Image 1 (cartoon, rainbow, N blue to C red):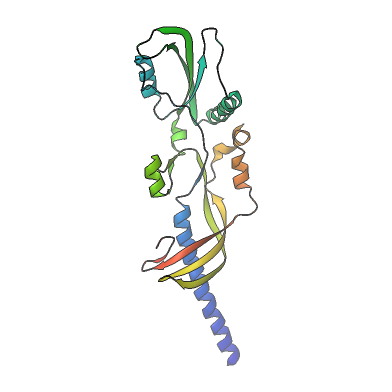
Image 2: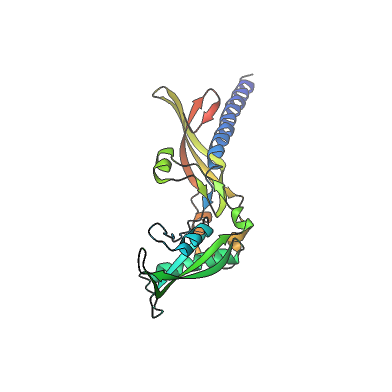
Amino acid sequence: MKKILVSLTAVSICLVACGKESDFKKAINEKKSKAPVCLSVSSDSIDASYTNDDDLKKLKAKTAGAYVISQDYDENGKNSDYSPEQTKNKFVQLDSLTGAGLLTKSTESLVKYSGWGGKKTNGFYKYTIYTLTDAGKATAAKVETNSMSSAMFGDTGQRIFCYATPEVEKIENFTEADDSGYHVAKVKYSYKYVDVADWINKAGVKEAFPVIAKTLDNPDKTAKINLFKTNNGWSTDF
């Protein structure tokens, strides 16, 4: 009889712990589903605020939502780029995404004005424009952001070129305690990446963005998080 009672107690403890782990997974995955990993791609801005150049204003409107690399040439055709390596890296990254079918590439040149109300010069600006394709638009995701910093910096939480999403694989361990009126579970978990995009394997993409391999191949895929017990179950927010 004692052996049976011990066995039943062990089973009961296991069911409670396993049930909690399942609830923890659900709460964490709800949070992580809003935290896909995305590429950071820089773009030059076209400033038409202080000019009467209608062509520049039209180009700015035309390229809204596109990625632009701007190059400045003088009357002798000399490129006055002060950071050629940075510009080269932009081309490498954007060209790799173009090859992957996420962008289309075009160029436009505009002659330079000598200032507000000034005359045209012999110099010119060359704009390389990368526009999102339908496949590129499909990589967009709405991510969770800090509301205060978002409002301050105009971050809408929209990301482009998202290529994977973390998902809990196992609850490694957890502890529970009451803290400042809340019942808190401190959880350590391991995770994997799901919904990994095929386009990251296109030629040149991983070479242009080393962060992809660094992220996906990171051997330590563990993290810690605090969960709070609410009337609706466990949550990352209290």
